[in-house]
Length: 634
Image (cartoon, rainbow, N blue to C red; front, side, top):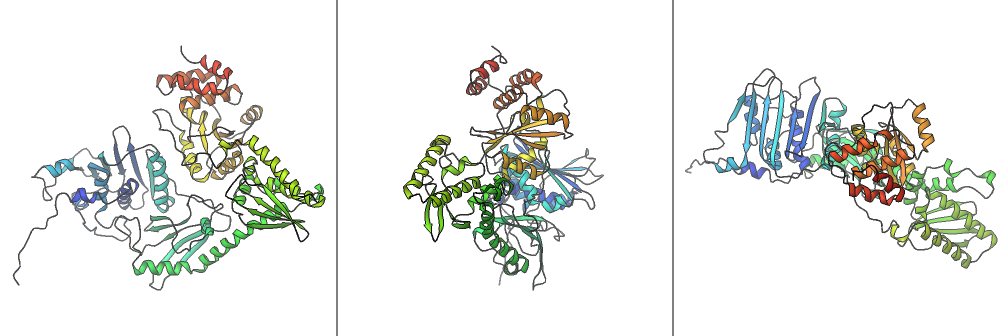
């Protein structure tokens, strides 16, 4: 058969087309971080810095790894060039860097150097590459810059195809901390985003539930890792398995090997499937392969996993037992243990939402907790049943929103029902009692502020302004609260204005506001975080002053329950300064002499609009408006 040779050099548009493969911005940056981690020096902790430059609109990923020589840089630029060694490497396909850079922007530059060698510079400009006929795969130019004294690689992408916005910093730090957690925990790599470190995710586990997984498969491969139970169910879907391949997260919160059931919302863990093939984006496993099917089958039936699933299901039923213990009291005070000694407010709310359809017998009462579609339905109904007072409670009734701990209301309903049962009162009397409850809740919680009509959606942070942001030591706490705390909150006052304070103080006081009735839960959440200052809930000025003078704690976080709707997770400059003024006026903050200097600085930097500040002050009353007006020019 006659043959002919033909030129199948790829079209010059291939680099551009590689960038059109559906990366998310985070995934594309992760491809570059993968290469940096592959380049780390043996026995040396590596630092990888990601910079999102909002002024120049560019993205930079740099490392202090071993860098590249000319041949290595040429191979890195060659599409689909296999690395000489793939064992243990995150980059394996020879496509990641080119496709990621092209996805992020139309131009990119690479500066790299080996220790003691010159710095090499490679630049790609999509418009020039496609527009100039004399540029091709065979004459790509690499520059030599003799100024290089260190080692490592820096990649800068500009003329971006993707948007940049401040909230990305929070999201990327959390996701990269999760994605590269094993490397960070082991001290092999430190990753920062705009100079702020990424931390591995540390789930809030039920004590004693974390168990190791080590499964030997028939193929000779292994599945290693751990599984456990979250302290609270995740209503946001943050449960399941983080699945890693070669210490790099491939799938987060996966339901790998699990059957759909409400109880899995407490299941959490990390497993390593180093032998299972991944797609070239490294965003998922190839599920049609034999390796993946084998891993699913043997993970699902592993005794450790089966036992944990079983205990999780039985744990759901144990909530009814916990409520029974809480409600097991009579009308004799001598036999009653205070409810507050049995269960916290946060736990009470969690229990109430998980008890739909649960029946609890206690003393002469049988209480059935049932969530109904209409929160306007009667709070409860009673019926005599085999010598017991059967009480059906509507747990979706708005009355539960007026109690800090909803189990207190269950206790009151039990007492009322037992009294009605002993006195033989009729159904009309119970209906009248429900009418009074409804009348009370309508006065306490107006219909327009009812939970069913309250605006919902993700909490957003306002756009950070120059010189105005959270203190660095609070950024990690802020990120943690956005994940772990279900209610609205807002850092304000000293939390955002501390950069403007001129004098050094022995103890720093930070403020965070939250919705009325959620302060105790916020306090418990901050306490679990363990990396922040001492939290105090609604302290009086006298108590706070005494605490600040007598404690050795370096920082204190003051929690204030506030009734107004909190739109942002940290306050605008106007609201922050006004909240600081209120704190100073109440004697709860020691920065009174600095109020005018802080305001002048904010005005000079054009961070505060006087009209907006006056509008906010007016809501606090005529006296506040008058006092604040004295600080403003004109």
